[in-house]
Amino acid sequence: MKDKRIGFKPSVISPAEHEKIEAKLNDPCNGLRGYIELQQWISEEFGKSIKYNTLLKYCGRNFGSKSKVSRKSHVKKAPAAVEAVKKTSDKSVEISMKKTKISTKK
Image 1 (cartoon, rainbow, N blue to C red):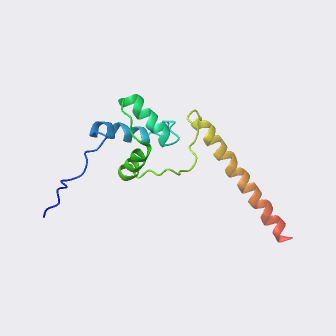
Image 2 (tube, rainbow, N blue to C red):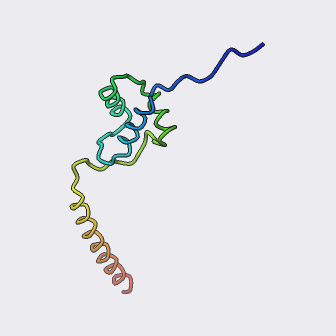
Image 3 (tube, one colour):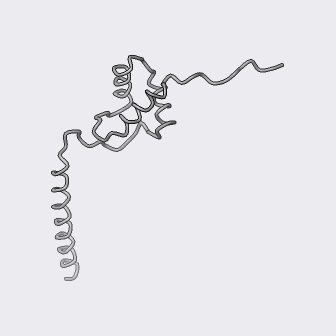
């Protein structure tokens, strides 16, 4: 007796769609906050509906993405402002470290 199964189901996502999804996920300014927003983007962009769990497994398998991630930075955040905060925070850390060294020597 032979098993009548012949193989796997074809992918719901074509290679061209795969490339567009990968570009969207790797874009730091894309504004996607989760798989539900990605699911909505796919339905708008490609006109097809994909189940949440299918999309979750597909992205995890092909792109290494996870559902629980650290906070994304705001899309409209100015990079120059970030650098200014980093510069001032470095100085304040140095000052506070000097103060703690002085207070521990007494």
